[in-house]
Amino acid sequence: MLRNTTLVFSFVTALACGDSLAAEGLFSSSESNVPVVAVAAAVVANASETAPTAGAVTGEIKLKGEIPAAPPVDISSDPICAGLHADGMEMPTVRGADGGLADVFIQLTGVPDERYKAPDEAVVLDQVGCSYVPHVFGIVKKQDILIRNSDDTLHNIHPTPKVNREFNVGMPTKGMEITKTFKKPEEAIVFKCDVHIWMKAFCFVMEHPYFAVTDGSGDFSISTADLPDGEYGVTTWHETLGSKEGKVTVKDGKGTFDLTYEL
Amino acid sequence: MTPLRDRAPAPALPGVVASPARRKFGFVLFGATLFLIFVGAEVKSRHAGLSVPDWPLSYGQVWPKMVGDVFYEHGHRTVASAVGLLTLILAIWTARTDSRMWVRNLGWVALLAVILQGVLGGLTVLNLLPTPVSATHATLAQVFLCLVGWLAYTGTKEWNSPASTDPVSARVAFRACAFALIAVFIQLLFGAWMRHSEAGLAVPFFPTSESGSLLPQTVDELVVIHMLHRGFAVIVLVLVLRAVASVARRLPEFGLHATLIASLVLIQVMLGALVIWEEKSPIITSIHVMNGAAVLAFTWLLTLRTWRCLAPSPTSRVIGVDANRHAMEQA
Image 1 (cartoon, each protein chain N blue to C red):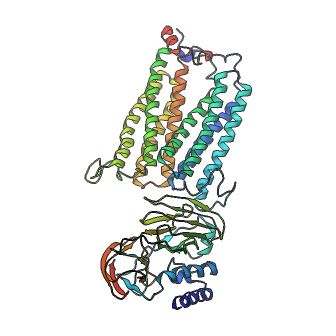
Image 2 (image 1 turned 45 degrees about the vertical axis):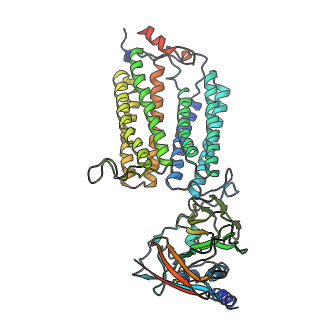
Image 3 (image 1 turned 60 degrees about the horizontal axis):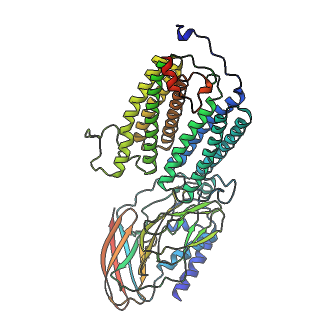
């Protein structure tokens, strides 16, 4: 109920504001003309990752130090992208708010060695505002990834896995959707668009569902459904700040884990 | 014996059709192919090879939105299509107007090469740039340029006239050119291998590191591939300049051609250094590739010109006539 309320609230907020991608910090643009519906969909997708659950490992990944200014991206090669970001576009690799670090992938290690069923619902990867939303995401192996083009320009979706099968698909029209998946566990698969070289996303393919990605404030929540109480390892990953490890104790389905990255 | 320079130009062989319009058309195709090699190099230099994932259409269309890096990949396809069309025209034109069967066949071979090149380009896209296919695509482009150059040259008065040069001098110059040609071709293979293995900056300094070393501290496969290209460049430079000197001394009528090759090869060395210093700046890298193709093609044409001097007449410049034996008899 709480989760549904959050989703509805996010949707309404996005509709009202119309500039939520920039507010989320997924990319910064002082004048974003990204379509409102696409923005709302992106916010819903993000909210589902961090919404608190009854039993969960929660916490915050903090950042010590000033977030460096991101160099501007030259997007002039596509007038449609340039039109969406009239005042220029930046693709910061380190972002966050209130001392929190966004886009950190967190996974529990040492969980029971079972066959985890992939969730039925697909993870949405949207190409919106000439950027990928979300920037970092995870799936359980064989879980579908619904890849959508919300831009009025063409994109190609081209992940470059080392273990899984590489593919490259053209998505020339707005609203086009395709569904893909990966069958083998693999970390940090780079998704890129060869048309717009600044576009990049990272995908983690997991054996189990005990993972999350920090939101814009560095907060995360990993559902502990079906996870026995006990002590588990925690591995965090950030695209430029690297990996860290720690431990968390889960008791009555709940645990807390905080960690700080330094610049 | 009459001095070579005082000899009157020999008349063209009757029966051989060397249409000026077709000759010019051939050289236009040669220039277009050189430009195509530059455009193709731009695709690789800017990592735009997969910006259009399908083939033969582009995003299911003949003309997609030319945005982002689609400009380079689809632009390459467009120029390639134009070159393919020009080759088709030249092949048919040659087949209908040239009395020499081997020249007509050369036209068809060029057409076959450009079709194969297109298919290789499609395969490299559909298979996500496998190095062997991509490197073959890059190498066949250079071979095609040489074929087109040869085809154009067979339409010139020079090719269709009896040689009036001392065959012994021509033989020495021909050998020097042939060695240079082989060296340049091997160098292009090394270059394609290095480029498509992403080893272009495996040795990021030129000529030496700050500590004066020729090699980086760690030597791996990429460094070896890179150094093969860099090291062999010295051999190429020596052999090409030797050939140029030999031609300039023994066949002065080809002096301008030889000077052009000497200039191109020296520019090529400078461009190679610039590629390193500018950390593979796309435009410089692409010019380096195109200039390399020009060195090969002009060395090939000079080799053909010296080879022509070995043969007594245009008709003997057909496979089956022992030009070398004739040269020995003349000597």
